[in-house]
Image (cartoon, rainbow over all chains, first blue to last red; front, side, top):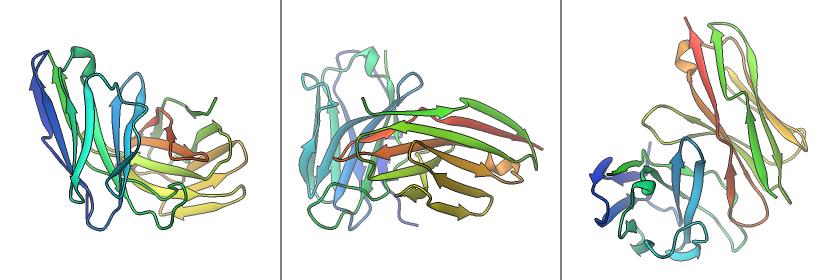
Length: 118
Length: 109
């Protein structure tokens, strides 16, 4: 089965360092979501792209987080500078939506990047 | 405020002991309700989509149902390999998916 690929799987870094997480969506999918998962909050939406354009990044702290899709096969989530409260598992999910309406198809998740900021 | 609540938080079952997981939601304009399974160290894996009240979906020992206020995931005669966290997500009008915090299921042989 085709899967979303995320790298790295684990990242340990010191506070203040830049962190870049990468995601390769399933070939042919035109939507990409970034989520953060913690024990306390569960899954929180950070950003949403359709056809490489950002449609919703309201869940993302703008001062330190940025998300981009340089091409259809790569999505990146960057944190600069990182802080201990950013420690979490970051998931990328992709899907296919047809037509201009809101997305309502199932998401396909990668296995996440576990980030630890010390 | 749009909200998804799952119960119980944790559930322990003996192998073969059937039970149900609950997902209650309050959203404005439900576009779809999704069930996912998540194993430790993995991303959520899609199980079912339900779009309207009265709809049911089945897959092996799992059956999902939907009413106007909640969804149930029924597990019939569970096996140890069904142990996982089960997540419910709803989508209202718009792009936002609201996830519950999940039910951690343990099936004891």
